[in-house]
Image (cartoon, rainbow, N blue to C red):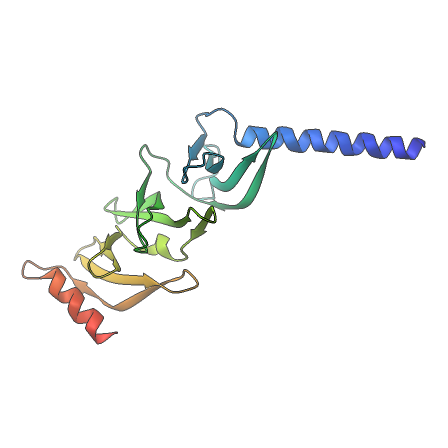
Length: 200
């Protein structure tokens, strides 16, 4: 009997601690938290926690995808990485041509600030899932060319280069052809057609 009571007390304390911890995850907005709602159902949240005390160049951000579920919150996945916190750091853009806007999240810059890098999460409102596209965060200044259904990267350096990408069925980025230099005479639309025809 005594052992049963002890077990019940431990389970109760454990549940209270878990619930309280989850409530802090999706609590009121604070300076080190950001909340993004990718679906019409606002119970699903992309919660971003920034750690301003993290050592320089070490992972300083934890991203959670979770759902409010009564008094507790269900965390579907989380990841840690290094990001630079700025205002207006995300937007909704359709990157897989399914008519649904996906989430791109700014992570930082390179090339003396000229190149911006992002994470891409594909949005599925029917299944209420966010799927990360692997390797997207390595593309400088990405944009989506809806006409040709390709991702266009534009790297700024001593000489500026375009590069073309798509992602496969495992949601992993692959490059199409080689990067090509930006020049005054470049017809970008024609060049994209040439590369796609060569690698179709």
